[in-house]
Structure formats: structure tokens, C-alpha cells
Image 1 (tube, rainbow, N blue to C red):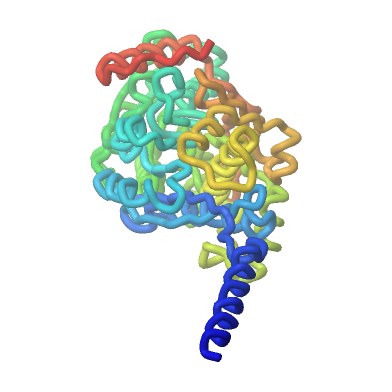
Image 2: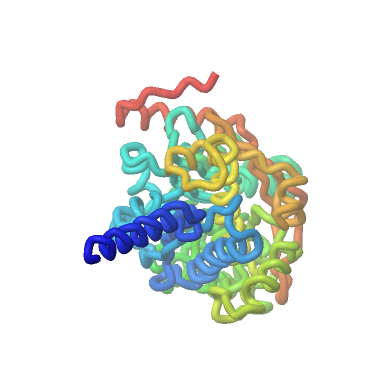
Length: 440
């Protein structure tokens, strides 16, 4: 009797095990793709960093909520606070690069951190996405296989500024003086080399005015500006340095319409509290900030109306910095989508596979419209040799209450930039003993 009972129990257990094994994958974990988010919500650049970080996280939330992820693959992400400090940025990178299925790619959100991570990316095989910033020569994908300065660099921005000034001066800058007031850091120093080349070509005098970080105190700088009377002034600032510079320009009597700032010094928070004091202030934009696109409506419907938005105040959605954050995440997501077309949908991809996606982006006008970005940005296509894609930028001006578009879209003149990219990429390859890739 006891043997029969044991046999029956064994039969029941075996049947139960069989049921567990043969049950469809109800308990199988869905594929996930991990995206690390380096942010600076604290520190000197926090006014810029907060909406930028909010935009990055919001777009990833939107893709999960609206689309169920990318072809069924859920996007996971984790923030790490850098306070815009290179050492902290490296610590965040080291901690997050192996999380989940492996980091899909890093937006360092800092030129200094980008410099620190570029060497590591080669060894770790992790992509570094720097939309509108970073190492300008990393456009050259034959040397910088893991860097992607998408949509534009500080060199393309510099050239566009000079193009617009040339237009105002009827094609000649001979005898003119152009000043650069810059954050004394790798970020602020990026345009100097190209400006020196352009000064030699166009015949203008270049005056350099470094500002000690964080840039709150600038009186001595603007006293020099007042004394030297430059015809135009380029401003390479961000965070607290920007409104401080605009106030000093007003106090010293320097006309704001003669100032051109890089896009990171041209967000809504930089000027809205200044009102008429910033009237006439010019900045560059790599997207059409005069409109809100379908992606903003989708974000409201699928994320903010459900109380899941990242920003503490939804009024920041649609601002320049928030929108750029969304664009950065969108490019990351589309790199994942492109890689899935090659390596398979519905599964987690390695960082090396996602790198292929970054290198094979092809966002046509039709694709951008479908994604909800069609009214805001121009098409972009990358390749093995070109890790920037087509660069577009336009000048916008603060009218005391809002930004107004003041130019058509510009593209940088590559006649000086391309040789400079090659020169510095060659030097990097030689110094690091890197063999150029053959992209033919």
C-alpha cells in the first residue's frame, strides 16, 4: 500500500513538472534594453542639466508607454549624477556600462566627460553619443569608431556664426574684431582652433576672454570687452554663466544683438527671467524651437496626463533644453531600432550591435514625421566615415518674451573644417596607435 502511494505521488509530481515545463513562456522575462543616463541636476550647470535630463528620461518613458518599447523590447534606464564633474562622470560610466544587458550608449552630457571617456570607449566597445557637443574631430568615424557627435559640433556651430556675421557685413570681415567669451574648460575652448583659422582666412582680429568657472563673476571680463569694443561677440557658456554674461553685457552697454551664443547658452531658462534685458540676444539652434510637434502631444497624453512625467512642472516640456534631451534619447532609440533590423527584433542587443545602429542611422523626413519630430528637425544620415550626419543650424533671437527665428537653415562650410578634422584625427590615431578603418 505504501509503495502504491509513493508511486502515485511520484506520478503527480512528474505531471506537475511536465506542466511547468510545457506551459507557454508566461514566466519568461521579456527582453530589455538598458540605457544609462549621465545627468547633472546639481552643480554650476544645473539650470541647463535639469531640463536636459528630464527630456532624456521622458522620451524613454514615452516609447515604453506608447509603443511598448522598441519592437517589444522594453527600455530600462538609470540616472547617475555627475554634477558636471569629469571624475564623477567616469565613476558613473564605470558603474553603469555593464548594467542590464550592457549599456546601449552614453550621452555624457559634458564635453569634459566626453574627453575622459573617449579612450575608454575604444577598449570597452561602448558608444559615446554627443549631439551638438563633444570632441569636434570625432566626426571622423574611420578613427573614432565609438564617438557619435550627431547633428553638429562646436566647429560647425562656430562656422555658422561667422557665416551669419559675414552676411550682416556684406561678405567681408576685414578689419573687424570678434571676441570669444568662454567658459575656461574643454567645453569653452573647443571653438578656439577653428576661430583662429577663420580669422586668418577672413581677416578679422580674434580676442579671447576666458571666464573662470562657474562664471558668476564676470565684471573684469566685461570691462575688457568694453575697452576693446569688439564688433561681435561669441559666447560659449552654460548654466549660471549665461544670465550673468547677459546682465554684464547690459551693464557695460554692449548690444545684445551683437552677441551670438552656442546652443547650450540659448535655452528658455537663460533669458526668460531677464526679459527685455536680453532682448536682441542671438543663439544657434539645431532644431526648430518655434513649434511644438506631435511628440509633445504624445508625451502629454501617454506620460504626463498619467502623472508619470519626469519634470516637476509640465510647463518645461517643449522648452529648448527639454526638447534637445528628447532628441538625444530619440537618436539612441533609433540606433537600437536600426540595429534590430540587422541583428534581430525582440531581443536585447549588445553595445557593439547598437554601435552599428548609430553608424547606420537614416532618419528621413518621413521617418521623423512618423516619430513626431518632423516639424522640429532636419533629416540625418550617418555612415562608417561620417559620425555626425548632415549638420543644420539656424539663428534665433530673443525678443524679450520668446525666441524668434532670424535665419534660414545653415550648413557649415567644410572647406576649413574637414582638413582640421582630418589633421586632429590623424594626430589622435598616431598618439593612440589606432589604425584607420577602411570604409570603402
